[in-house]
Image (tube, rainbow, N blue to C red; front, side, top):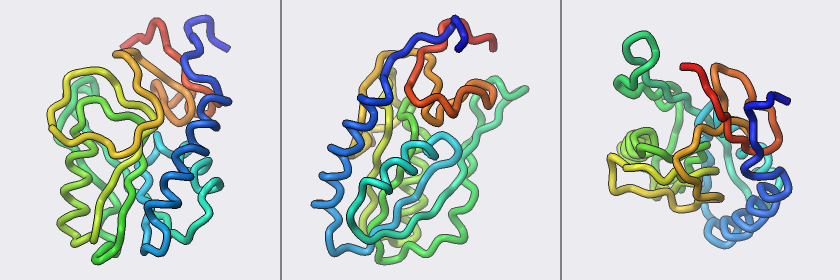
Length: 176
């Protein structure tokens, strides 16, 4: 393990929260036509663990969101890939994402799914970062609120590294 990593949220804390959220989702979506839309790559660990806890019928789909700016260091326009192949009309959609920071990804994706005439659109995030948001939209379900820290693990990466860590860690000295 890198010396620049400091444990923020343990695997046990994550598992406990997932069980709690799964129980809420089972009540909210019982008897509904649920589609879980996972945002790749960051939400892969959360989604995998969540669906193993859910005792209800659902379909699972994925999209990939990315924004490219100058030399990959600044945010550009958000691109959503994979939404065009999803049939969501009249269905209840739960977006699962890794982190809510500016809010741009969730706001853009929610709007795009609503335009596909979904019956309802809700969202679940692993982390809600305490930073200024560019939208009034907030996740419907949040596992953990965190301060403005650079975090990795449990699907979150730094230059494609650390996704497989079982907890969430603060990366103390990222080199941008």
